[in-house]
Amino acid sequence: MNNSVEIKNLDLEFGTVKVLQNLNLDIGAGEFLVLLGSSGCGKSTLLNCIAGLLDVSAGQIHIKGTNVTWAEPSERGIGMVFQSYALYPQMTVEGNLSFGLKNAGLAKTEIAARIKRAAEILQIEPLLKRKPAALSGGQRQRVAIGRALVRDVDVFLFDEPLSNLDAKLRADLRVEIKRLHQNLKNTMIYVTHDQIEAMTLADRIAIMRDGKIMQLGSPDEIYGRPINKYVAGFIGSPSMNFLEGELSDGLFEVGGVSIPMAGYEFASTATTSGGATLGIRPEHVVTGELVVNAPFQTDVTIDLIEPTGSDTLVDCEFAGGRFRVRMDGQAKVSVGDTIRLGIDPARASLFDRDTELRL
Image (cartoon, rainbow, N blue to C red; front, side, top):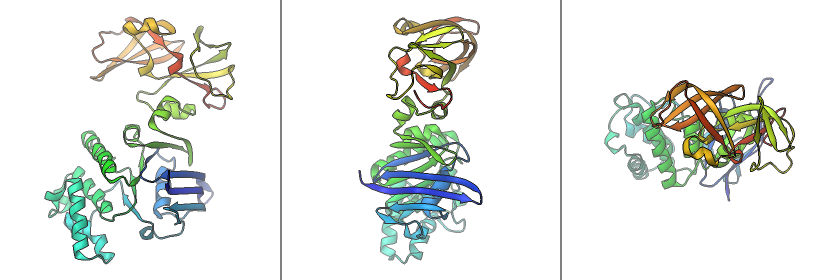
């Protein structure tokens, strides 16, 4: 895979505070990479370093094989879409799209052709003569994307572009951004704290924490084989259930319960005994007729029920801790009911109690 963006040993310090630490990342040509993490993890800072909006303390940034570490943003061959639309209120949509191109000295015919193409792709042709005040939030964000699109660059950077929109608009524009990437096949680097956006948009996800990349992989890898307890708890809604116990002789012991771990795939270097945390996602706990096939089964009493329409989330107590189960939305259950649960260790995750790394 040819790399479109390469980040080598990148450091960024504000005074004595290290925001990014020895960060390395290769992004393939045409790849959709999502930088995911909670507020303050360094994801937007990293994006701003790639864009040239922040000067790095150490390391290098290469775009399409060229070292752009100290290049101006306009010289990097990037288009950027911000969380705030940052449109000129006194200009029409057409004026906003053409402004940067006019400053770059492009011919009128070329400017018109680029605006026409971007407007068709983003379906904003009827809006070209309107001013931003006459547009909805979703339309303004489309125009902001269009302003990056007309630059005709190889790399697009998105800094939480949908976070100012309501849930319905976010879902609609998320689909449009995915379709945009499929049609253009440009490299896209996308910052978000929304795991649904990350899982649905990304070819690969980089989960960040404290200025470091915790795990880099496909959505399936990060969801199915999280590298540590932090990643496991961050990805998934509702969050993964965690049970603190002891691992010994192929059994996970917790709260007087023994769960056989036959079928669990240990990492080649992992210890198979000692203090450990067992993680199991609410959607991987089986109920009803499927329980008979589960290697481990137990009865629990329902404490709380949260209907969400397509699913029903059930809270119960298991092995001395709170445990959540995702059931079908039509499940006929009530608080106080006793139900049988099944767990397949092959779908679980085990983490070392001290290092929190996957076993």
